[in-house]
Every structure is written in structure tokens, then in C-alpha cells.
Image (cartoon, rainbow, N blue to C red; front, side):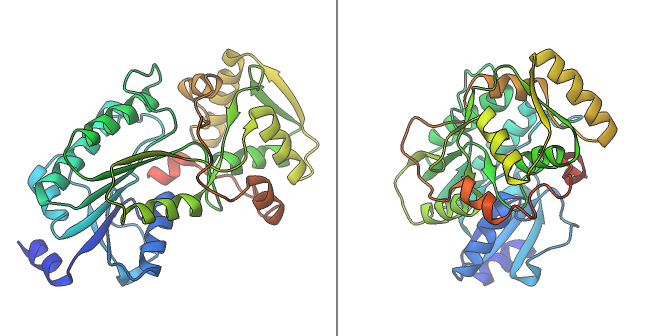
Amino acid sequence: MVLRRAMANRGPVNVVTGAFGYTGRYITALLLQRGIKVMTLTGHPNRANPFGDAVTVNPFSFDDPDALARSLDGAKVVFNTYWIRFPQGELTFERATRNVKALIDAARRTGVDRFIHISITNARADSPLPYFRGKGVVEQYLMDSGLSYAILRPAIIFGPEDILLHNITWMLRRFPLFTIPGNGNYRVQPVFVRDLAQLAADMAHDQRNLAIDAVGPETFTFNELVALLARTVASKAWIVHVSPSVELILARIFSSLMGDVTLTRDEIRGLMRDPLVSKNAPTATTRLSEWLARNADVVGIRYRSEVSLRA
């Protein structure tokens, strides 16, 4: 009841799951810039709040439907960025799927006006890839929920805090060899994180039920992407192709040395199935090649650990 009264006194707010994370942080910053009150639900409620008093913080309560509903009381729009990159301990893709379903149920129960969900390109409930399958199941659940919704499907998200492109570049800066699984002709269509945030924030004012790909204007084969990153930092690394099984062995060795998870079997399979590209026209404008040229002195300067972000 204390939370319910506090939210009521503040008036309508937008809720962003994971406002201290990557995409959630950019969505939150844009909403605040537009004068919108923001609350976040997070798995790290004790983490330093980069927004200070401007953003109210509450922990996820996925296993307590009543508490989860109370945490959304007074919310006008929910932006969901919550997901996992890989399973760890009890947190599996199945568990993550149940958690997002619980959030959708809570939003419906409390009368949220609009639910904005960040998914991924080519998400399908029947996908052989657990990451894409879970996203597809959640999409269908949201579509069937009765809520007004918008689904944004990015491929690779790039920006100052991204992990994948920065870590590839970090390796290209430091090692004489970089390996690519398979022939490297599978494609990616990167989207700038600020463009994704703007698409999401703009969707809050459109009451149509929408599901669109959030992709930038450039498409690269993985070979082209790695070559672009190498040129950006003047890397002299020897880029070679290896079998997926060899790539996985190398990734596991490197992960052990770094205390991280750098690449999983499913991620290798996913890359090689070519799902990170859209069949539709670009919906974002920032070009990765131009962004890299402007940020060549800082991209890949330090390694970014996914595991440490979950701690």
C-alpha cells in the first residue's frame, strides 16, 4: 500500500526494466529528457543509480504476482528490455520467458496503457535456437494479452557500452590471430543504441499494435564486419576461418582465462543461420561505419565482461 500511494501521488510514470543496463539506460535517459517520470524494475536494486533521484528503483518480483503488480501501479507505459544472453545457474531461457510473461500479466492486471517490448530479428516460437525461441514465445504472448503493444526487433546493437563489437575490437587490437567460425558470409545489420531508444520512446505515443525490425542502414557479412573493425583500429591480426567446433573450443579456453562467457554454442549456431538481418527497409539512420570512424580512438580499448555485469 505504501508503494501504491507513492506511485499515485507522483502521477503517471513510465516503467523501464533494466534502466541501469544497456538499452534500458538509453531509453530512460531519453524519457527523462522529454520530461517523463520514470521508474525502473531491476535485478540490481543496490547498484549505483546513474540517474539519481530522477528514477525510482524497485527490484524485480517475478515470483510474487501481487508484488509485481504493485510495482507497476500507476504506470502508463512499460518498456521491457529484460532478457538474458545465455543461461547461468537457475536462470535459463525458460525461466526468463516465464518472467517476461509474469511482467505482461502484471501490466494487464494494473491497466498499463502500452507495453513496449525489445525482442530480436527473426524471433520465432518454433526456432531451434533457445534465445530466438524464447523471444518468439514472449512476442506471441504479448500479442495475445489484450494490451496495446509495440515490439521492436533489433539485430546487433552497437554503441559506447556494447559488448560484442567492443570485445571483437579489443581482441583485434591485442592478439596476432582472430578466428571466424565457418565461412563468415552470414550477415548482421547493426542498429545504434540511441536510434533504438528513440524508436522505443516514439512507440509510446502510437496506439497501433506494431511489430517492426529495428535495424540500421548498413548490412555486413561477418567477414566484412571484422575487416571493418580491424581497419578502424589498424589491427595487423591474421584473420582465419575455423570450423564451428574449433571456434567453440577456443571460445571456452578464452572464456576460462577471462572469467567470462565470450561465445556459446548456440550463439555460433545462431550467427551461421543468418538471423541477424531484416528483410524490410531500415528503420534507423546511424551508420556503423561512420560511428566507428568517429570513435576509433576509444572502441575496443578495454574488455567488457558479460558475467561481471550480472554480478
